[in-house]
Length: 228
Ligand SMILES: Nc1nc2c(c(=O)[nH]1)N[C@H]1C(S)=C(S)[C@@H](COP(=O)(O)O)O[C@H]1N2
Ligand SMILES: [Mo]
Image 1 (cartoon, rainbow, N blue to C red):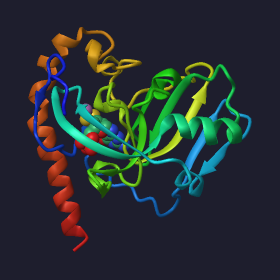
Image 2 (image 1 turned 60 degrees about the vertical axis):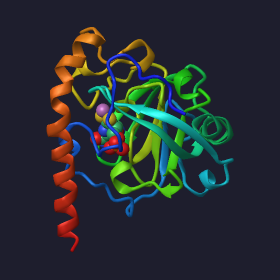
Image 3 (image 1 turned 135 degrees about the horizontal axis):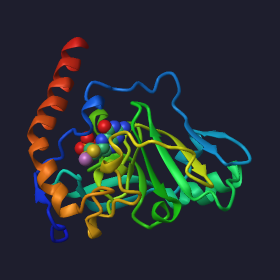
């Protein structure tokens, strides 16, 4: 069952492939390095792989909200709780500084986002490797993506391969313009961006939806043709 749509959102139906334009043509391969790297203000940098497979699996049903105002409803994600990854692997193995609560999530296509650790430890934040009982499709971030449904899409990093824990912001720059990124980006509070109020950004972003979906879909099509 889906919740009532948050302010300024509309139901787009099936989840499109989406993102900042510079990522449309990037289909990152995981062949070179399948690991999930843990770094930053930690005692030990570690690379996780098989360890993740031993964690308890969960399913969450959630609506997905892109900051540009489209939402895709009732998605069933399967994977592992971020909280379990943190408590059972990251804390004992990497030993992050207890004040390292500024977390940067990085992806194989170069995308990144930051969130406070406390937001990531909530009970509905998962690293998902399946969507609606199917292995996560490449276009939706295989093999692993963050799903944090209380936060706008741009915090839900696809193709995730690094999580860095910092005591202070180490000079991190968001993927897009600074005004486009809110440190928490909570959907319930319409925290779309940093400077302008959320309701105003709705009108700025909405016209971008159709061209962006086309751009990403065309990139996927050309890539499929290239692969024969
Ligand atoms: N690595 C990566 N993660 C990303 C993006 C991206 O371009 N690259 N786009 C973000 C945005 S703006 C949205 S709305 C969602 C889109 O997810 P989808 O392509 O699976 O619909 O992914 C987010 N995570
Ligand atoms: Mo988005």
